[in-house]
Image 1 (spheres, rainbow, N blue to C red):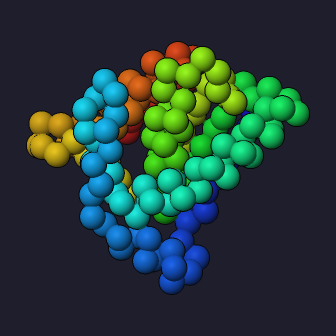
Image 2: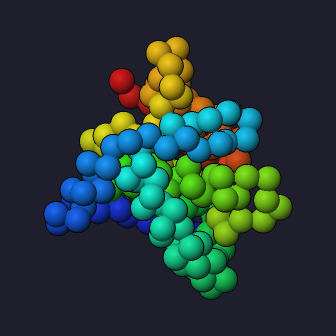
Length: 146
């Protein structure tokens, strides 16, 4: 089956604190090198990752999750992107994962990724994320609009 995980946009002052925590955190990604990611959104992905895995495993135990769709708008889209990176790292090289394919649908999401140079800036980081998505879930689809 298909499972949708929807991230909401900003609703409170606490959400805006996460939004404004805009320093970049270096995250080592096998095969890519270091990815720079917005520390506020990354912190949220790390903090909620355990609950996300529990929910996915519970859903998969009830009925196999063929396609996991992460989606959101604005802050929710940024959280969906961070969660996608977190999940790809969590299950990189794993023999089994609680979903078959991973799709990411975001609207009006701020840029949260970079590679640390003009040559490998945010567009390059998104292409690397797209490549990792294809590598880890070959039937997945993603599009970059600029």
